[in-house]
Length: 334
Image (cartoon, rainbow, N blue to C red; front, side, top):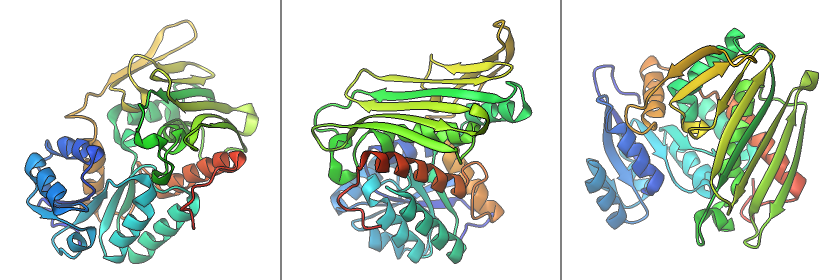
């Protein structure tokens, strides 16, 4: 299924919304990526997207695109509520998959898809774009090397002003703050403190649209280490991350931590331990496409930068938070 080394990798997109446009824009700087096919629920929307972003083929249904033997990998950019069904369709059709985050609405769905991809020997990756960014990878390198000493605590926040009618207020689309915004703080905590906390404590406020408006999470780890994470809708945009070790700290305040292009580590006397700049080639989405294609060309079925076991572990934490609040979507059968 994978393209030959001297060929472009042909991408098929499932969903022609805003994030698919961002991804297509990022991919525009990659010479080895072919924007080959776009599938939407209507041919009109697919053709419009194809014309705007330079796709060769447009399909008016997902099923029709999946029958195209020339699609090497499918990028799933549908709403979160549809990820499980869409990814399952792709895997059953024998297609490699890069799926937007959050991968699914719960861990059971995620685990089933991961098991299916492994069983079918297909490449599968969550589009956790931050994990492929140069700054994220450099910070992880610093932490793994002991530059900050032992990481003891993290404080990560993601609040946004979602206007009236925004998809995050729509329960039927798996709306709410946790899966869309809270995903990022939990992802960072799992990357830098570990994917299996000893305990997950959380508090959730359900708003008038019957989705979570505010979430506060504490992940407790062995040795008293912890991460305090929070997210919310309807407030002024506030996005920050603070990582504290026994020898130093890193703070993301000037840029959104999940799309930072520079980072500096300081000791407790405010001396610079290390600094790094990693600008985007376009808009940041290109890096996850590059990672997926690198894996395909190497014959890998999973990304080391975005491990599937960590993806499932993140979903388990989000499940626990929703379980603590007694919050379940109406369409959750699995």
